Length: 264
Image 1 (cartoon, rainbow, N blue to C red):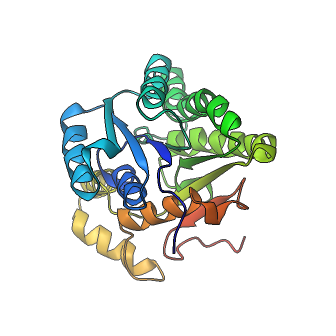
Image 2: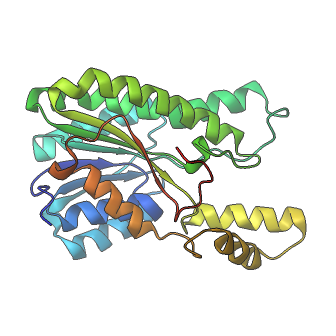
């Protein structure tokens, strides 16, 4: 299937590893140019080399950046436009805040979580919308978590800040639809990333158990009897960024092997 992404230009946040890197890989395989950004430059350069092997050096721009900071967002958008002369797709993806119990968290932790998850997605979207409006084409995709539909114990900061993104995305999708710009959220369930491994490690230490065994038990509770792969999220993002998904907007799409218990 031709997704119509050849020569499109994408910005992918958190692209040094996991689902962010998988999204960048999926897009370049479809012929898109990508700007990848992440906070850790060493990991970002490794990802850049991997992506260049799939496409070419001309297809990738790597920018070390902390997208929770407004000045970094402006830098990434400006440098992307200067390099590729357009911006078509944005994948907002920043690592989740640390776990904590709802009743124990100080104000600063809440402010930090909102800056990291909600404000970063809002600012990046706001930064690229003028380019997309001028082209009358664009795709904004927020990589969030299934926890916005089914909360996970002690991930209250992640769930609350990402729910704010869901509300913003729905309102934004209505505003931008007439410009042929879609806004959607993707909600990974249990996908094998470094963050997922660290969460299971923390659970094992707290419970005095074994992280690998906990992951096996979690996989058994999923109808497909396995955890997800980052590449599967990359493929979903590539589809939502494509011409083929032009009538899908304001939606939150789960990738979880059927794990969500809700009907709607």
